[in-house]
Amino acid sequence: MAKLRNLVGCILNEFTEAQHLANNYAARLGKEYAENDLLRYFMIPNATAGGLKFNLKFAINPITETETVTEINFQKLIQFFTQLSVSITETTITTVLYVSEQNILTGGANYRKLKEKEESLKTGFHEHLSKILREELVRKAINEVDKDGIPDHNRIFEIAMDVINEKFFKHSELNLTKASAFKEVQESCSSFIATLIEQSCKRINVLETRESDVLDIVVDNESLATIAPEHIQQLTFDVNLRNYQISKMDSENGSVDAIIPANN
Image 1 (cartoon, one colour):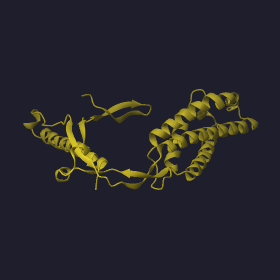
Image 2: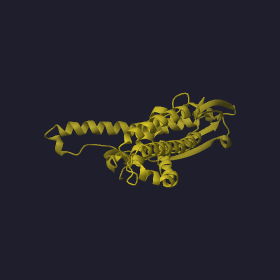
Image 3: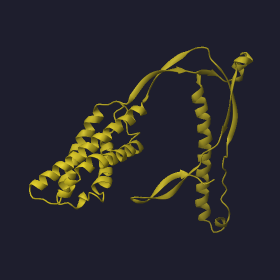
Image 4: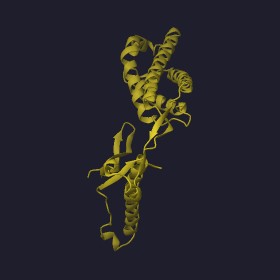
């Protein structure tokens, strides 16, 4: 049985792999040329595949089959991240306000200004923090799901605390890191958020099982010769490699390597 997606996928993979092998060989030549006093002045040979054009003739086998497919429901996962971001934000703000009240009652003045920002925390800061949390979870945790469909609560916790530390605790309008009881705030938030994320992840499964039609096709010449021409389909492919390169980019944490589209 030949499946159309497998056949086309194999062709595209072979095309990409061919370019990859050529790049690796050019890299090895580059090292060899650099170490040779004569060769170092020559251009390094390299071949680049600009594109691939081919026609695929096939006929659909009349036998209809289905297969059970299990895959991640990414829409459900993103919705989970959205709801979780709101819950994490509410837990963070509630914890900070509670600790600030306790410090004010015991004579601490460092959190008095924070208490005055309570409404701002529950509105503007709430929206700001939950939005950033959602964006970071979607960007960094979208593939952090185990084989049983459970999101990795440890990785999600790590991402969430990075955001809270950088975008909330260190925010210039709050300046929580300079408060005398900051360690208590941080530890309390960390503990509550870890429990929240772990329990939330245990309650969700983002795997989805469905029945999918199997498109069985005939592609060999001998079989196609026995099929009426009007039943033969043809797909034309014009494939171009999308080249990327590794380049330095500036971020909040300094210069980092990033994969970006190549300047062709």
